[in-house]
Image 1 (cartoon, protein in one colour):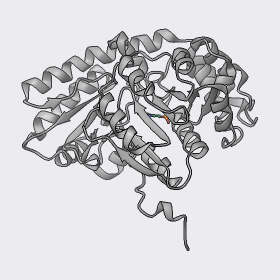
Image 2: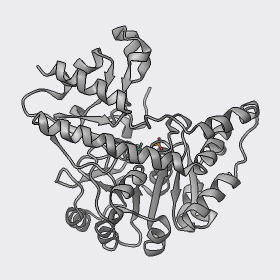
Image 3: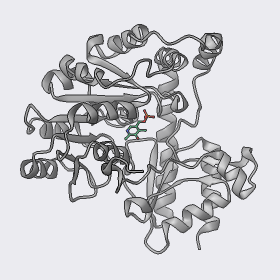
Image 4: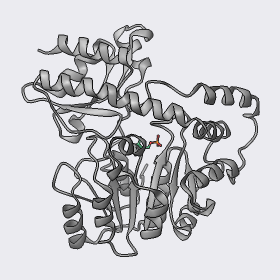
Length: 364
Ligand SMILES: *Cc1c(COP(=O)(O)O)cnc(C)c1O
């Protein structure tokens, strides 16, 4: 059978390996598996959220309120924007899909960093767009502007902080890029880790209200999957100028966020203390990874997220990741990004103990 030819040179997104796989393939006890591969919150989900979902579980036979009145209302008041500025997605991933479908025609170009979140490329290619990347490893405002001038892409993806490397441009740098774009260029400002980044340094904080009032062609993406501990529920959001959000709505399927998921997100917004504690703990534990790297001659990049990257000179990252996997430690090998490194989610204190212990043993 013939399929859409845009799919021909598309690689399937490589998700972090699940705990079940390690149990099945290497016979590790489930309790001994340490999953540091998908940037999940090691504190799990706020107990208040779990309780809210449990109370609501008998309602899963009902379709959600498709206006998502309560969750959109809560986000609108959190960010001081109007509900008309918000669209929800099954993860912010789905909002990326809306953005590409709504904006791109065959042959359009999209611009992104050399190394960045893999889904930008996948969604853009499905629409028949051509991918253009900056030259340098880390986000650089000047490179974005120069490449933009040459190729006039229809969408510019900016990932602050960036996955999988963890670096983050300042707000001034992001605004510098945005003020350089034509009004007809859609700018996606992906802030999946902003709760972490803004805690580390206020100069990187992007506020959706200010962003979209200064730059009506920009859309802020946020998610409940990382700091809020709801990866399994699939809830994210886009915040943009009303006419942009209206266009995204045209490609949105109805009931795209499950009712239990919307309820969980709403409850999660009410427990800011859980998020704050998780973020504080993250950077406390991150210090241990930084020190360990120095002690062991491993190169890292200063991280504004809940993960850190380790780069190796004299061993293969794939071998390191495979050896750790056999011990039940799941990390993300970066070979598919053409980098000899691994991305490690900052775990709980005991999970990190296990990582260091096993890592020392696999040092061949
Ligand atoms: C995790 C992540 C997302 C979105 O995740 P969802 O679970 O789909 O909300 C988006 N962008 C980046 C850079 C991410 O790391």
